[in-house]
Amino acid sequence: MFNSTKQCYCKLLFQFQHKLKQTSRACSLRVKEALPESLLEDRKYDNDEYEETDSEITFRFKDLTTNLCSPDQLRTKPDTADLKFGHVFTDHMLKIFYHRKLGGWQKPVIIPFENLSLHPAAKVLHYAVELFEGMKAYRGVDGIIRIFRPDLNMTRMNVSAQSSGLPTFDGHEMSECLKRLLQVDSEWVPHGEGSSLYLRPTLIGIDGTLGVQQSDSALLFTIMCPVGNYFDGNNDAVSLLADPSFIRAWPGGSGDKKVGSNYGPTIRVQKHAISKGRQQVLWLYGPDHQLTEVGTMNIFMFYEDEFGGKRLVTPPLSGLILPGVTRQSIIQLCEQWREFPLEQRSITMGELVKLQKRGKLLELFGSGTACIVSPIKSIEYMDELIEIPTTEHQNPIYRRVRTELQMIQYGHIKHPWAQPIE
Ligand SMILES: *Cc1c(COP(=O)(O)O)cnc(C)c1O
Image (cartoon, rainbow, N blue to C red; front, top):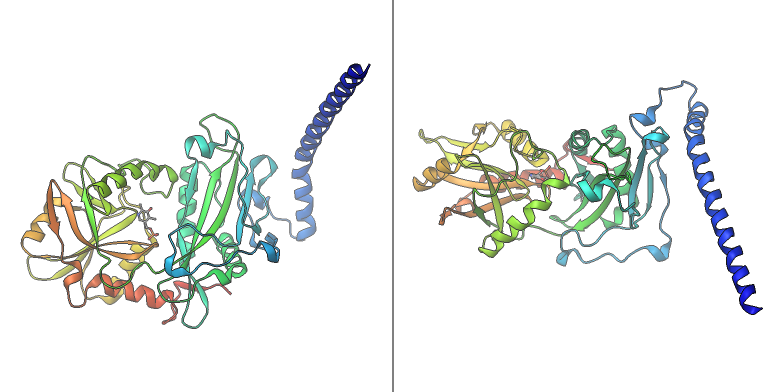
């Protein structure tokens, strides 16, 4: 008797659960069908002048809503002195969904920092349908927080998105959302020159389908982390391993885009460099061993030509080179200084070795948002160690460039590249 009652309950329960599932499925279907129209209706109320369905093209800053952490959710801020890059994150994040079936971009939201929930078949997890940016905000000497050239990062992000079949957006609207995120977490922008808050805007394809196809749904999010002083003193010059058997980028490839798939495969090469006692990889390309990039930085060489004139050279944006914001800024600064010619042409290891042997190779340095400018002290190449006197000069170019950028970033001089967040 007892047993059969139990069985009966179980059956009822099962039937009930099944019904519930069916109803909820039907509900979500109905919501999906209804949404595009309701979105359009919203729009009609919003502005009298009816615009084209804007959300197919971009989201808007004016639609941004903010959901703040409760006081007990706020995390303690670490001491920036012993901060490892990318280990600690701020209290909030920005999230913007894109669903083609719902008319495109949804409304941007700032929410407490949280884990993502993804379908296990999400394209990002299988085919690295993913791209990112790296940018920084600085607390100036006047207490004002500034973000460095966000428009350039947003333009680059859109180029990466297009090349990944992911939706593009209005970079200015995104910059405005980022500034709001910075306002919300402004206490996380460290004090003290050299430290900053790193922003990581990321766009991922989240369709839960396994076909190698364009993703109809995407998530654009931004997380942020405080970073300490990268460069303490003058002993920060790095050693490189240049081994032509490793190739980072090639013509017609995606090396000039900040897409995740360019970086995972470099980890084993970086490990190899470390195992040989070198700190970073110097990426070479082609039979003439062209210098392309250092780790995840662009490269610059300062040298003396056969007439005794000094020149700064960096490889051109030929498709092998990531178009760095720092690279572009250094080029623009040097063009303003008009003290020495700046060349954008390829540099080969043959040329570098020759210059070094004649004592004409003055400086070699990398550039990127993370450490701004990173001097190079040596290169291991074909079982030989090439020493470079980058840090041994009186008033080296790498330090002048770094100082000038710092002056702008920390508000010592007013400059349109450093945009106040309010
Ligand atoms: C991000 C990156 C750079 C530097 O770009 P910035 O905009 O200056 O930070 C250079 N090379 C590679 C491969 C990169 O990923």
